[in-house]
Length: 292
Image (cartoon, rainbow, N blue to C red; front, side, top):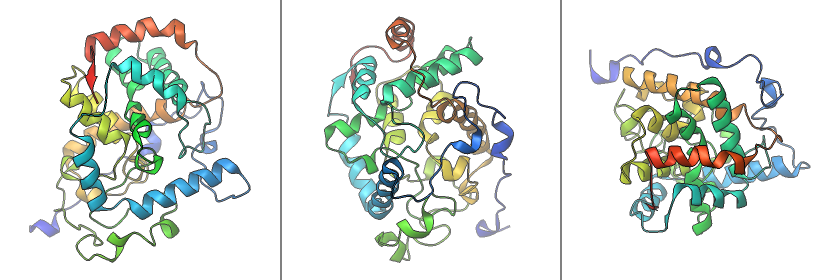
């Protein structure tokens, strides 16, 4: 069988991994990720504008430039808790489900994981820190290059990307024959590790944790790296680029996604009382002052 004839790996149905009723948030599943166009609603308008900019400017060359800029890890020296506290000043402009500061979402996610997986402290910490890469927004990075769903650059855009039909029309990669085909710059079943993702907080935090020699397991790092890759883990796109190993990553990301997405609510955890426990996990898995 030739390289181009290789079959895609099997497809996991994401719905099999979702809870039928999200208890913590108290909302129905279909109430989340509502991207309908409604310019009279300021949150929906903000979300659509953020994605339009992302899909216009996130190109192969843009991502290469951001990697050159951010992967030197010379922007900030701070502890993980310092950065999490800083996120109290950030509201994610791409999120249609919540308008609360990001630190609230971090503790909501972590606490629900802790409730369901009491013995997996690495998982609790993963839930807490998964958005810490959004600290880039405090160093002049526009939110469209920090937040939101990620996608693969260097090949045709996945069908399930939000606002797919309208928001990529001015992206120059769509007119570049090197980048606009099914496989683009990639080989069939080349694997997630060999894909170049649109730039955002997922890849940045993954790389930052590796750079700072975290003791978190690889499963946790993959949850962080791909948790915003909705066109893949929820939409079923890009399977032709994946390997059997990536199916194990998909299972982990879907498990994490239940807590990342379906815990968003207006119920505010008692953050100050929870800090000592989570500080102990930071000290165990990613201690001290870190290079960001």
